[in-house]
Image 1 (tube, rainbow, N blue to C red):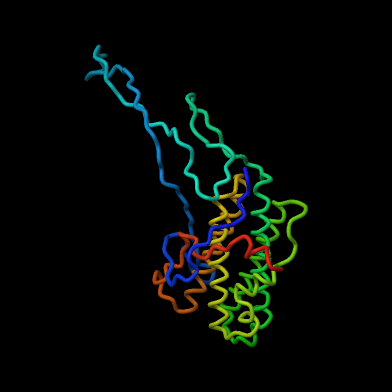
Image 2: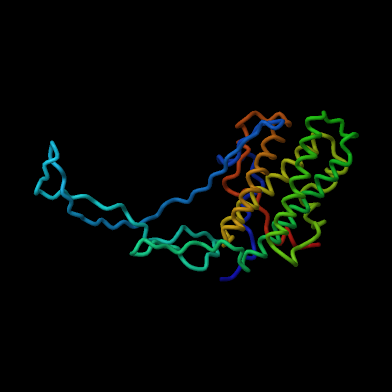
Length: 269
């Protein structure tokens, strides 16, 4: 099928986040679990089976007992605008199913390429901030967090590169860097930098969350999902450093409100 050319972008002007996708802790104490589920939309077929139910003391009864078989899902998985699954995956009459492919598919590559550009650009933003930590005057715990975030983005770009194989994008996007915060990383105050860094994590985690609906292979989806988990934690911890009360902004990803368009990620270089 055709590879989607955009990643859905919801309202970027929203002032609060909705959902339950990220939980956090500070200074190595953070843990989070991200679970994504689609609503079940099943058509059911009842099948009547005659069984013999034992009477007390184990004496078989000659009266059959009617039971109803478990419902069988006869609909394909829920699809979205960006679902590029090549075929509906449904349970067959014999109980067999058609699973998604494990290995990364050609249709996954443009999306993984965009994910890598986003990670390279986020790494560059982090490294710009890390280079001026002394002038920012942040405490050592905050400095350690910012260094870790930069290291994570660089590692994610390398992991995506390994999954993509030869020919993956190799450089960040300067236009995207400007969109994500631009001069703030190089010139902003410590509070401005932390806020801009939090927005970068929101953009990354929301964009990758949207990508999950379009990736075909389980290998690609598992890689991107593992990145979402950590970047959601980044956003949450940075929010705490900014004094946001826990739960006030909900610091979570549900509606992909900060997801970027593919053109925003890879275009305008």
